[in-house]
Image (cartoon, rainbow, N blue to C red; front, side, top):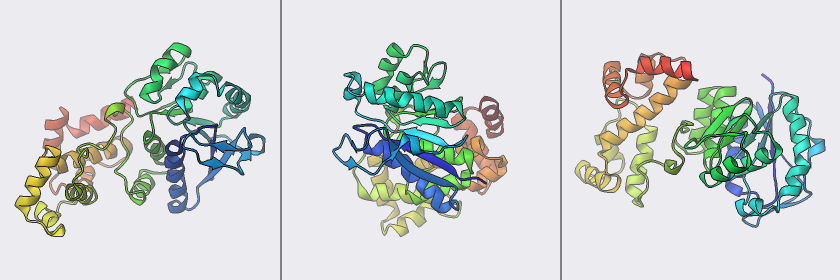
Length: 325
């Protein structure tokens, strides 16, 4: 399999999170996937200073990049105010012709967060489904009327152009691309290496993108959630969890409910169904295999819980997901 080159193009006042998250995903994918991704960093400017004040030098000039079809050019987000006040028009316009040439020869194009504004200004989002940070959506609808701007999407993959919402959603989109171009297993290994949950689905609402039921500050409950996320197997019980944390079961149950609003079992079921959804959507595993992978000793238990929570049997969901995807 050929190595996919990922070229990050840095504009002035780039946001570090928008750059660092996806770059780390592809770096880990290269480390764990036998070097099948290569990241490079380039800019139309000789030197770029991030929005947070960190300077970047030694960036490759655009004309020195040699990209082939199915490589990826990624535009991380930048300071929104600077863009809307026209400070970035000149550098974006200088880059536009080069980026359109890459698009015409079959290179994929991606943006993180406000990076979609640059693509919109270049005309690359015309008649393309796309998204951006929720703060940018009204601007995009008003200034890029040909773009098919979607709300409440973490990322959108359409016609070889991939756009994502704010900040950490770039990690989700990068994981989705690793999964699509390589395998779900490699994406899961990357997520594990980066100590994050399995990537969120593209349809998750943007304003709810921070980790569900983790908007608290209790270290013990957070640790319990992390252990549960990594121990979905059926034989791992709630009693095992309490012993691993050196807490009584009663104390842990009370602590967990007070800080999350959910019982441990309900939260665990939530994790298992989320994992099951990813497997049903993106793998060839049977419902029985998915049930086992999600920690259900009896696939009928998985099917009953899924149907109760999702309104249809998992097999029907899998068929519909394939039709729509």
